[in-house]
Amino acid sequence: MLITIILVSVWSLLMLYAASAEYKYYQSVKTLEPELWQQLGAPRFLKVPMVFVSKKGLALLNSTENETVRANAKKHRQAGILFLSYVGLVLVSAIVFFKLA
Image 1 (cartoon, rainbow, N blue to C red):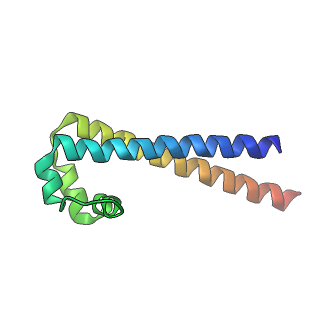
Image 2: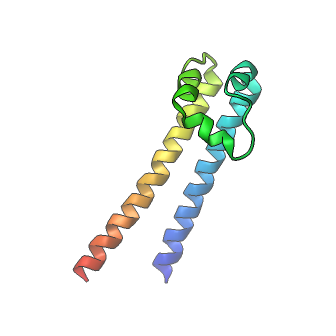
């Protein structure tokens, strides 16, 4: 039971960290690069993440010169990789545990 609480707590913290990094990244593009935001189509609500992963959107975002936006993009990517790595590690560990048990 304690292991479950720890695993879920770490998962929750990493998910919150990733969501926070994503939000900061979106807001930095929206406020610091308004012309880029308009070129992306000024997305709203559920459309925002789709614009940021599309081929056209990535090309536009990679062309920015703003250091804050670039730093937030890097943190967003690192947070996503950290979260997915944790989920993958837990899944692989569970598979190994149940195969050997």
